[in-house]
Image 1 (cartoon, each protein chain N blue to C red):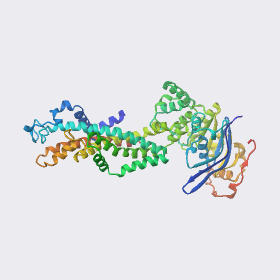
Image 2: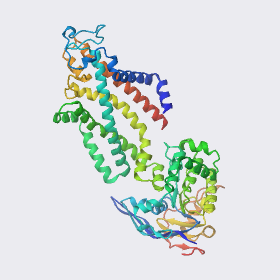
Image 3: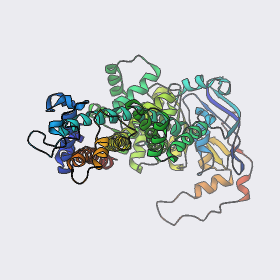
Image 4: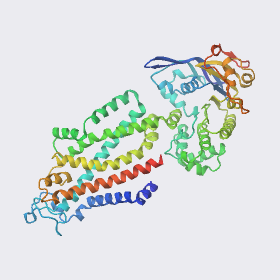
Length: 277
Length: 290
């Protein structure tokens, strides 16, 4: 763990990733203290500063009702991060348990679980989410639900494949021979061997969840106004390109920075864990 | 002398997509307390499946059809519930494998894995007690820097070291039967000899019966008291080690011995894969009470 951190911080690319992610997290966590106009995250109208290009007062410019764009980007980060963490915190355990059980038990259990997973995987993710949001009300809660529903099968598939190959390893047979319970073998022997891959995927996925949630919001199916969201901010501003460029460019850059940061860390972790094995 | 393991007329069939494959055609063998018995044969002759049937692992495979009587320390294994059979594993019977390094989980230290083994018999064992007990056991397999070994991960130790760790783990709960499935085949010859010597002394001391599965006749001759030769799922010859090696009665046994490469050179002998004489009936040597 400590060694991983040291490698992560000594490589310039992964260090950049760590810095970007820390920046995003600090902005999101301390939004109330950093944002120049905290009240602008809600429905506030300020026609004096309506649709202004970046100035010293509004460093990212202001939006169509005069709200400070910088403030809104920071609060949007908060929503994106919460969504990302919640989605992964639900879909990772579900997918992992499904994958482990299918991989280790095999037979009927494998058939039922993995075919179910295939059904979810066969529907394009965004289409599934759009369909779910169409049936449900477009709220933050349901956006999380929809993204979670399309996310867990990837963990199931990943963990299933690792579990299958780990089952061939001698230590699984050795554990069976010594009389270890199924629970012990699955969660104490096989799971720890899957963790590096799971952690790497989670880091990479933080970026992708942010993109997917932004895509849903861009289509008007995700986070609803007046709650700030990077995707809906881009969508709103896209209509006023190229004149009011700051409406799209800054939220877009914000997405880029967060996703880029998480991906850099994810790639580095993949290399580190890969080299160990 | 009490019987530890008694197998009678054991049949094994696998049901596959292409039909039924017969693997074991009614083999019978027994092992007495403290005895070292070897099962010798070529690849695919049914050595390892026999071991897995004794442990009850193969029974969990739905495609396997198993018939025949299995008695362990006087109790009929077939009448045991899965749970009872399960309880025997790792306590009354244990097993060591070909490749010691892959038999240990790479993400845990030896210390942790030892504690888990010891808790099979003694679930409330504290960490400190487990460590000191593990150190004692490692000492018995001539590992003297146990503090370092216990803190290591399996991949940080050599194959011979891991094999010794495996042996001490397998004997940790004082089983009455130890099944050794080609132990040390993955190791080089000197290390293999060392670990076999260690195992020999340990089982002598603890009066553990050993069911030794091997295709290495040299090792078998040194290690075993009695030998069963298996060919295509049938026992073709059985008897005390000395008797079999001095006077192999069965055509297959003779072919097997002729196939051992000589250190003096002279090439590997030509042996036909199929020889009608290999299917001759069982040859029994004296001194083998049935």
